[in-house]
Image 1: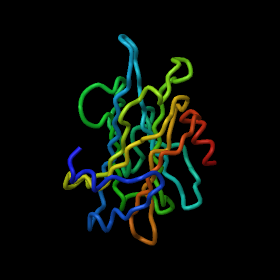
Image 2 (image 1 turned 60 degrees about the vertical axis):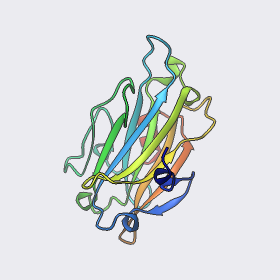
Image 3 (image 1 turned 90 degrees about the vertical axis):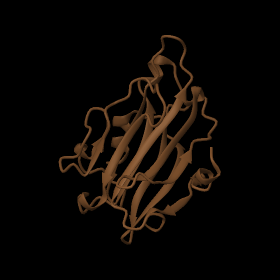
Image 4 (image 1 turned 135 degrees about the vertical axis):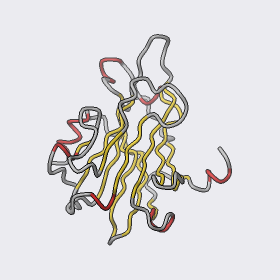
Length: 193
């Protein structure tokens, strides 16, 4: 990792202003990547999920959950790249794009989770995932603004809140995650009811 990139890294729970780091920011690109330690012939599928939430942490509609079964909101305000089933290759494995000005007026935060697909049946956990990260970029310029690297000891964990982008009195901010949540994608959605 270069020194320039190291200055952008965040710690678990740390909050930062994306608006100040990248003035005029509106189109946000969130990349997620890792290096699963899969055995030969084994499929290790990390899924990124975005939950569009109100200020009081409510998911008001299932079409506000962006994942491999629903890759965009009706207004195209948030969409993700197609599901990467193996995590192979360099760079981000999956990417979510947010057009901040097009979010529904009641959406004040976008929570980003990462889960291992079918983890319990496959006997997989983040204990076998190396170098998991989330990075926030200005989608218009390609500039990487902030990065959070998951450094948790997670031998039994199957999912994590990686972070959230949120509105703070008109300012776009990011809070680094690192908090385990072993529920399935749909069970997490139910937690926001």
